[in-house]
Each structure stands twice: as C-alpha cells, then as structure tokens.
Amino acid sequence: MDIKFCSYQDHHFDELHNAFIDAFSSYFVSFSPDKETFHERIYSKLNIANELSGVVMGNARVVSFILHALNTYQGKKTVYNGGTGTRINHRGSRLGFQLYEFLFGRIKESGAERILLEVIDKNKKALNLYESLGFQFTRVLKCYKLKQEITSDQAISIRTADSWLPELSDNISFEPCFMDSTEQLKHNLKNETILIAEKNNQTVGHLIFQPKLGRISQLAIHPNHRSQGIGRSLLAECQRLSANSNLTLLNIPEAEIETIGALETLGFANEIDQFELELVI
Image (cartoon, helix red, strand yellow):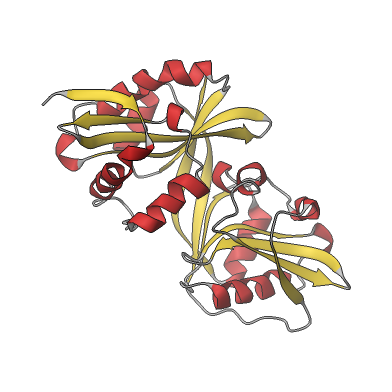
C-alpha cells in the first residue's frame, strides 16, 4: 500500500473520525465519540493547529494521525498533542514515529519551546514510542469520576457567565493541565458553561464544564472560602445542567494533595492515571 504523509486539512475530517474510532476501539477506556462530539473536541476544545498536525494517508484513507494545538502554557510556547492513533490493522509499522519525524521541522519553525502530551500509565506501547522520540516524564496526572448525586448548600448563590472573567483566576491555586488551562479555555468557551459561586456579591468559586459530556474543565474555590460547601453547590448545579450526571474531572496533578482530598471527600473516584511527557525542542 502506498502511503503519504501530509498536514491535516479540514477535508480530512470524516476520514479522521473513522480512523479515530478504529484506533481507540480497543483502548483502555471506552471512547467512541460521534461526529458532532469529535468535531467539538478537536476544533473547540483542542483548537487544532492544522499546519502542526499530520495524517498518514493510504488508499485515500487516514490510517494514522497526530493532532496538535499551539498555545502558551506555564509561560512557554507549547505544542500539545491532543490525540495520536493508528488504525488497528496498520499497527507495528512505526507510522506514529515516522509521522512525528515528518512534523518536527514544522513544529520547530513555529517557535514552540516544547511538545507536551499525556498517556495512560498502562499504555506501554505508547510510552515506548514517545520515549524513542526523546519525550521525558514530568508528572503523574489523576483522572476522576463522580457517580453519586450531590446536594447543594442553598445559602450559596450560583449563576452562569457568558465569558471568562479576570477575577476567576484568583480562585485557582494550581495551573490545570494544558487542555483545561486558562489560556486554552478562555478563547474556546463555545461548548463550555461557566458557573460562578457568590457570597455577599463576591465571587468565591467557579466551575467550567461541557454540559453535553459532563466533563469538568475547571473547579476552583477561592483560598479564603474553602471547606464551606461551595464546591458541593457548584457540582450539584453542574449535575443538574449536564446530560451525563457521572461527572468527570481529568488530569489533576498527583502533588495537589489538598485538591485530591477534597474531590475524594465529595465522592469522586480515581479511575485512571496518566503520565505527562515533555519533549524540549
């Protein structure tokens, strides 16, 4: 089969979706988004950089892909890998390795300082691929799911906001992962809902989430107002507005003991862990 390496273009979308479903059909967690959800994921949530993303074409089909975004994260111009995959019947041919080699020149020309990604800790094949390319481990990220109903504190007022508000930054005690970072979120809120918690007309916490999926992007309480039921009230409203009441909150740094303790007290369960990997350019 003749294969061709090329940058991702919008007309590849349908084939990319098919390849994504095939590549993740035997993954560690069930993940088979419909076309609409997948489109939202790569164009809104990821904000894909077409020129830095690549596909391998074979017989007019996408057989392998790497999807990248570009943004400032932790003060560094960062390329973020939001999805790598190869169709099941094309694995073992090192297409992921070759596709990265194809993209490296373009990534360097973008002025990015590094490439960042996450991989499930049990995914040994992916870990071996990234290590062979020079990626190095940076930290463990923990992923949580809430499977029980949350009741709210009626004394706490919850409202929605139409856009990112500067004062929300005061609630955040650690920088979330790339996809849920403030710089990534505040320009791509099309499919997100912002909930604001207030006491005495003062913002004391916020929660940003995708109602269609029940996926929480940020949950943050002002340091002066923690352990007052604010997180519980935000989560109760989030559940009420979400199509999926089993809320998910992904990629919490393992070192954030206080946050992890608060999540587990609320009923969140750690389902998987991911390794964050970095390649300095």
